[in-house]
Length: 203
Image 1 (cartoon, rainbow, N blue to C red):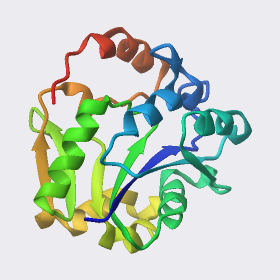
Image 2 (cartoon, rainbow, N blue to C red; image 1 turned 60 degrees about the vertical axis):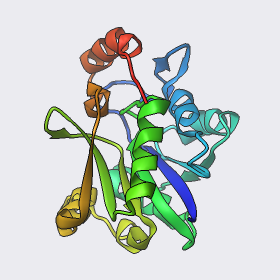
Image 3 (tube, rainbow, N blue to C red; image 1 turned 120 degrees about the horizontal axis):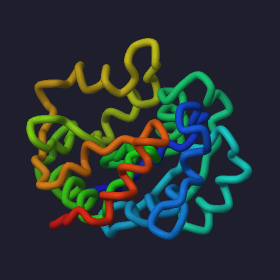
Image 4 (cartoon, helix red, strand yellow; image 1 turned 45 degrees about the horizontal axis):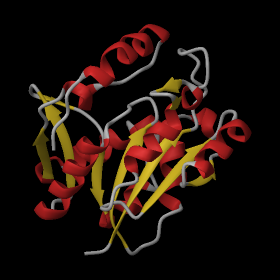
C-alpha cells in the first residue's frame, strides 16, 4: 500500500497572532507538540515539521515529539514555500501526503478516520467536510508530489492543486466542526481553547 507521510507547516511569522503559533500552550503542552502527537497514528509512517521563523526555539520540541524537522529559509515568502520544502523531504515511494497547518489543531480520531478513508477509497485527493464546508487537513496521493513541490502562493498554493483535480476530490463528512478550526488571531486562539477539548469526537 505504500507509506503515508504528514507535512506539518509551522514556519510562518505568526504576525497576526503576535506570538509564534507552534509555541502556544495547547492541552498542557505546546501546540506543535500536541499536533505531532495527534499525527503519530499507525496509518502515518512519517511526520515532517517545516520550520522557519524562530526555528531554533521550535526544533527541540519537534524532535522531542518524535518528528523530523526541515527548515524553510524562504518562510517569509508564504505558506506555499513551506509546502514545497516539506514535499521535497519526502521520497517518491510515498503513497499519500497529509498537509496540515500548525494553527489547525486536529484530534487523532479525525486524522485517523480521514487517512483510512483516503487509503480505502484510493482517491487522488481527500478532504474533510462539515455542514457543507470543506476543512483540513487535505490528503494527496503520492503521484501529486511533483505538484506539491511546485506550489506558489502567487497561484493560490494548494488551492490550485485542488482546483486542477476537482473532479477527483473525495469529501469525507465529519461529525465535528473541528475540521474547520483555524486560528489566526489571539481571539481565535482563546475561543478555540475554550471549546476544543469539550467537543466530542468519535471515530
